[in-house]
Amino acid sequence: TMGRGDVKQGDVMVHYMPLFHTTGCAVLILGGFGVGTTILLAPMFDPAVIARVIEREQPRFMLGVPTMLVALMDEIERNNLDVSSVERVMSGGAMVAPELCRRSQKVLGAPIQIVYGQTETSPVATETWFDDSLEDMTETIGQPLPYVEASIRDPHKNTVVHIGEQGEICVRGYLVMTGYNDNPEATKAAIDDEGWIHTGDLGCMDARGYLAITGRVKEMIIRGGENLFPVEIENAMLEHPDIDETAVAGIPDEKWGEQVVCFMRNGSGKRVSDSDLKTFVRERLSPQKTPAIWVWVEDWPLTGSGKIQKFKLRDMYVAGAFSAMPA
Image (cartoon, rainbow, N blue to C red; front, top):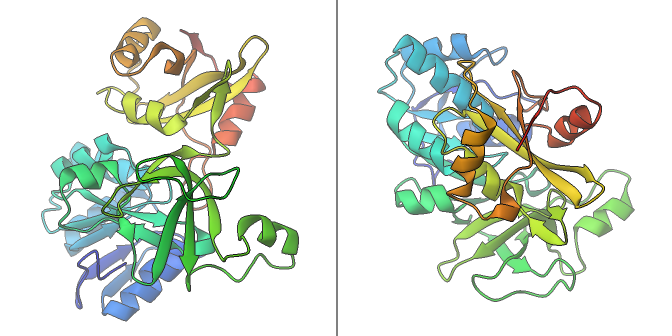
């Protein structure tokens, strides 16, 4: 991971990821030690503090999940901080939208190099290259790392699909976990007889071996019999200049089975009208993919590693925790 990211011996790293998380432990600590970086370990993630430490210490490399990078870039822009030392930026753990990659290029001076994997794959399985084209950096999750096999498989038949076709991303290699602790049933459900771990992510692979994520098997929204993938809608909405972050989920609906809800956050507090949002998304997506409900949030329910918990957003909405703007 560090080698493909062009992280070098002597590079300074401001480490603000939680150490209990596989990225904070395996990628940054073990990877950093393996390369020979100087690691400045923060006691917690405070974007205002971390942004100023980055300005002071002038690191060449940064890594964070998307929500962290958004918060850091907000602080850097708000306070006009000098982060010109940054040359390499990595992110993963959640979908990295193309708009966030472009914003990173503008604010940090470097596009985001996407790493992909999960705890069960120790954790990185694929990664873009630091000198990839902007198109590959914004539209793919890169190629498998050395000694890693990847395949796209039919989630129902477990057969390999053709190049360019959508299926479930599966990974095989030394990086795959032995299994879940004292849970052989869950292990068998995740790892098939040929050693492929089924990630639960939908994606496709091109002829060069570059993969792209199209959605989650479990996050897929089925509206009126049509399969909708939240990431496509999220990426479209993130193109809007007044939306900093977004998360799309499905909620139960008597008529359609499920309806699409788009949760949004804007750090400045600006709120765009529902009609403007609908017009904006309709210029980019077909009618059935247009959210039926728009919800502004002040803060996200996050995991300990900073990922947005969509199931909690969905449960909170169903419980009446949000005011919504019907489309």
